[in-house]
Length: 497
Ligand code: NAD
Image (cartoon, rainbow, N blue to C red; front, side, top):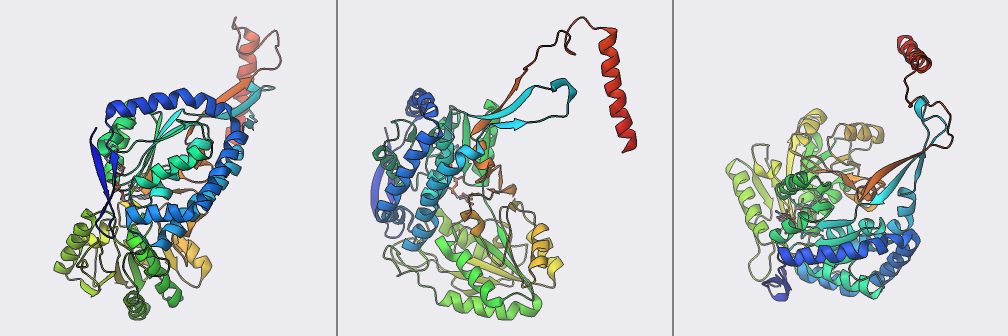
């Protein structure tokens, strides 16, 4: 079996080797998962929740080790790993342990339909079996392992194919679940590249994919061929709109934090800003001053860096290409603009102005510590440009008029919009989080975020047994009259409407 080298993006050192699993090894993992899944399902919500709460405690007890692993393989800062990964994971264990029984409870349904009068009608949620979770490199705990929690709580066995760039956190979570007493085989990690992911999609009962839109499209085609469900959390180009009455200090703080945290490698990063002309200069000045104060470097020691490394080497070239394209078309770089010399994959926090939609930096996902800011004449232009995108993941609007902010939010075509904030919707697991347009299919979190790992089964129980049922041969004139009356009644109702 070949192996894959894992490098630390902050230092360039090789920190581990992991196996590159082929199709046969993936098949063996899926067979193992199929053997153990029925027992895991039979354990019930209470049994599974008990283990989840143990895992929550393990994660908190071992948080320094988990942060160290995440920092080592991603190059992000201690704080980025703490706030957006460990805090998320710890909350998610408790949330799904508590909410799964509620979201997946049998639903009693009542119906006005005469044909089912007196019968018991219910919908129940049955786990699909073996779920394949395929994840990206930007959040190895939150975006890869995070989806395994509801999939497991629903009673499925899970195989996680983490990114080949950042597999170590997923493997550490296997250790966590083993130590907490999860049955062997209900959570397995399939390390490898895209081919390993392809092999997994060929065998599982459902795919939960997080990654680029290009790969998401391939997964959707493969899932369609097998007629299995897939949920896709894909790329974004989230717009920020700053209206003339905004609190500019808050807007500038949000612009800098949400475009630069995690080195801009977050699907719901602020990727572009539209600012109404009267406040544009002041906003740009505030943003530039705040960006100039950012500390960049290996961020393993708490409180020492604001912006860490890029995780994936090709991202540096992509940022350089987008900047060159923008500058060639008239943009001005007013902060940063270069990769840093020396060890590690660092790109300076960068601010661009004089931008427009002819430039890739305004229309293609960047996934780096860059913020292009565009002056707009008015709100209408801002909304039009915000929606001028193939993506529709998140977005934000800044204004002191809260009702108006909400009205603008409703006009932005994306899965989520925050008013006077950004990204925080992701932390509330009660809220569905998914992409519109080419940013995805389906959503994580909320009831839908666990029901997607199940199939709905409808059960109808007839409790009384009349000698003559409407659905019974022979067809009699009396039956025909009864159904005729019913149709007449519906016809009359239709006319009254
Ligand atoms: P990617 O699409 O290159 O890879 C994602 C995963 O898919 C990796 O594990 C990879 O090995 C695997 N893969 C590649 N080809 C495959 C194939 N043919 N079949 C099966 N699996 C295959 O994405 P990435 O570069 O790792 O991640 C960055 C992207 O993820 C960005 O576009 C970002 O916006 C997106 N993302 C989205 C969300 C969200 O919630 N919407 C969250 C995080 C990241």
